[in-house]
Image (cartoon, rainbow, N blue to C red; front, side, top):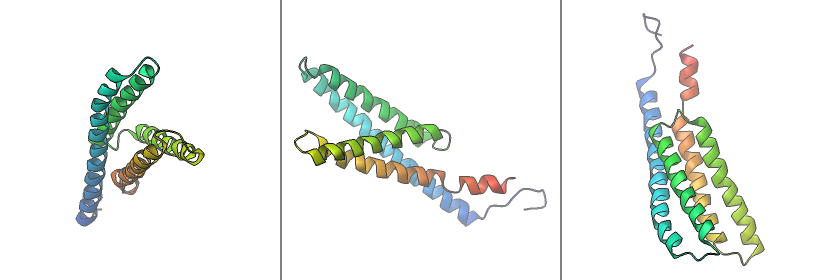
Length: 144
């Protein structure tokens, strides 16, 4: 604590925390760009879909746009949207587990690819969350 009663945070700790947060934000930003690019490419899937798959392809495209938007929110303000972190991580983990079960069953299209993509994204989101939230609790305890 300095003479004014303010806590002094070690500059090296603050710098490290800032680098972790920036890395987490970049990782989440990459997830946003990837989801938005996937959404744009899904437009062609919607336009090429027949009546049997049109609703499913449209739903998938909108979901990709939604995820891209949520990832962008998290990249821009990672410490404000705690509930959004929980939702996107839970969603991607659920998709991964479900696709893994489908893969174990065998013969289900896109299951293995979904395990790879959504599994990787789940790990990346958890890592980004940890990086973006690093030291936020310890700093708030110092301020008390």
